[in-house]
Length: 276
Image (tube, rainbow, N blue to C red):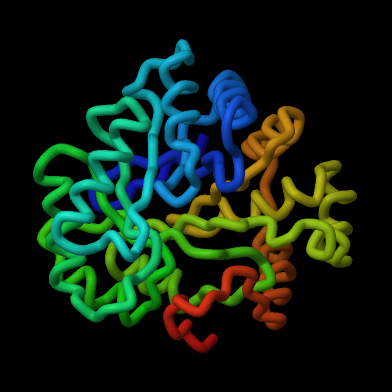
């Protein structure tokens, strides 16, 4: 398993995304993921599945210290009092004393970056999380957040897939010694998988299209991905990536798909994204 080393953190590059997984289905998928080799589980207060993930962690035979757990605070809670309560509630639901990575889920609507930084750093200083980071931050916001924090940021978790040009975010993360963690790494699947370059490389390497795309993610420097699945068979498919490699020419062919610059997660509270 590839491990990302970012500002003192060691993060399994391939994790399990859990958005929209709830209840017993979530428990079962997380347990199965741990059984087949996943060691990075991603959740958030917003997902309303932290209790299920906590139940899976408690039921697993894998030692806690071998599992990297990420959770996130919703932007409306990034203010004094609410932030602390959100973190405590997440730890209680997960039945953990500490998570491995705590993120601000989206940039809040205010511009109080010094406060965002203080709250996030305090959670690390108080031992509620081993590491801190952000999600959905643009290059400008990331630069300002790094300056405001007195604890190193280790991750910017962003939408990333071959249809989206994230070169500027990659460069910003590299500049700050951070990892880029991709959510929605397979975009919506079907259309991307039917692209001639993806389908052709899948046939050439005797792999599935999703394996080609995930391998593309992991071959970028300091980059990882957290594909979500509710299918046990897909868990094994998604993690079976470490016995083949794409050439630099093949990587470059896939990179050309970014000209489409398609974004899935666009909301009224989204920041003004970087222009490719």
